[in-house]
Image 1 (cartoon, rainbow, N blue to C red):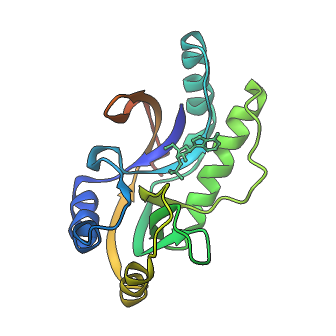
Image 2: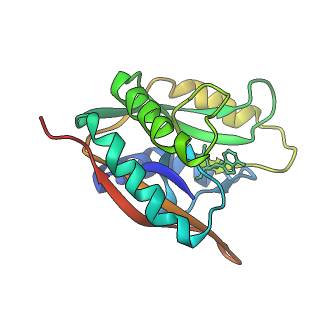
Length: 184
Ligand code: 3AM
């Protein structure tokens, strides 16, 4: 289970349009299913079904302190630095309300025994993963070409509690609860 932000349909389409040349290049990247693309806020891990209402209630009670905000996606990139590529991502422009929302989610879940993340929050949209060794030089050159390219922008007025189920054809994410942000 995890909390995240679902993309607007328009943003999803724009990201996929810009991603097309990368997907067509034939590099050994396992591309995220289009319907699964999202921005992860906080990974929760496995919890009992019986705990879901408690988690949802904690998120509802805390997080609406953040008002709706504009979120912009810009540029593609990869983790880690160097010659390897484990995660191919779309970048998220600096967005203080997004960090405030992330902190409020951490604050909401900590009393339930869901540990705070020790690593800093680096918002991104995972678009693909790679498990094989490969010479990615061509792809890295293409990445450099579109550095900082505007991808999409939309108003985030809610975030979601997702369940992720691993199936034979890959993970399926379903929204368990949508939590609206405070309207001022
Ligand atoms: O959106 P990204 O890809 O950054 O990597 C998983 C994904 O993040 C992450 O949870 C998100 C769900 O889409 N994830 C999976 N297992 C994890 C773990 N054990 C994890 N994050 C932290 N610890």
